[in-house]
Length: 127
Image (cartoon, rainbow, N blue to C red):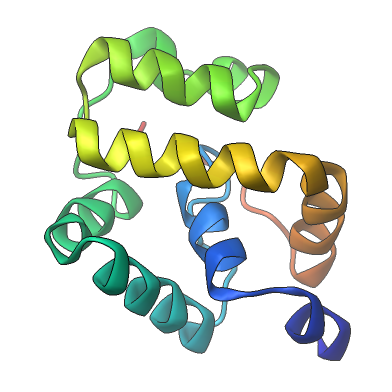
């Protein structure tokens, strides 16, 4: 856990919360709080929508919510499809794409950190 805490920043925690499989489920409460504080600094109006996304309170098109789609689609592509489906606000989608594009250079390392901290639940966050 020490290695995880040293490597991860609030933006990494937020990226984990936006991941269509992880949805921040395995983050510790303090990591979720730092991610939420990051959102409050970027755009406070997005926090309620982020909470809905995390708690399965957003209806996605069936194809985008399918477990195989979530597992096999690149994050950026999945979020671009979310933009096209208008399932979440343009503001949240834009912030997600901006952040995940920045994190994509570290994507393999992020996945290692995320999957090695705790057992990852296979269930989706909005399906």
